[in-house]
Image 1 (cartoon, rainbow, N blue to C red):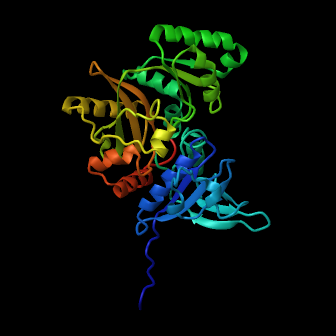
Image 2: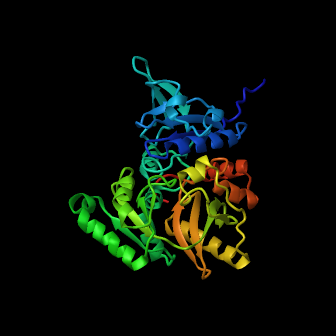
Length: 379
């Protein structure tokens, strides 16, 4: 008598991208590259896009439509299979079935999800908010947990943690929402005094932003108010950083079975057509880095050590890209970490791991496997 055997189903990966932050388009681009790289013989894939308004939408599995083309940025709204449908995750650890709700129709089951690959950048996705939802749902996910994601998104508290672990940071000042709204003259005076101590130019940034969006290099007092208002378009809390003169060095950290390891570092050379390594330089004009960074064996070993320390200090999981300055004195100063760095074709994180012997498809697979092997909840 023959037995009716059924092969086990493949793990189902929900790739979630887009979102409400200013980095919406870069998230779409990143997700397209990841969708292209996921091994379909090994995993089933469910693409879920979050519109700029926050609606979760079932989207086409179409990586070719998710790239920057002729300086035009992609959008989830253009990929959504419906203008009204909402994808709903179960807020119940006992079940992982995702449902599609369409007005006037019965809910449609989309099947169980085994792991989420959250390709969101910035607030409402990379900052612990999505991670908290996934913890409530009991669904494993790629990357940092709630606390590490929140700390990694907030440049002020990130730097405070770095200092407590002995990592060197550059001079900075924070202007909180109430300070600027209630007494802008006092807030401006605080920044001017900071400039008197550390010199111009200053970099005025949204405290919880990324991809260089909303950042202004300010050369003197005349441009300060405009820079503050530009940063506040993206975050009511701003951070002002002194110029650290040095070479820009990046290093990737990846979770292996025996713990986190650092990649070979990369160097971002000075950009000639931009004031600094801004959004246009990163994503539109395709500024390229040097991999590996030509900094010598001793400096390479040190920046790799510091990158892992930064990863551990914030209690990261999965991956991190750590950004440093290498000063003329040969010292490293950490600028920030990115708990979900870009995976676009020109992104430095996958390029650094490619040079370190981990190809793109293996990199994506390692991240998924690490998430599948990690429980939700306290760990």
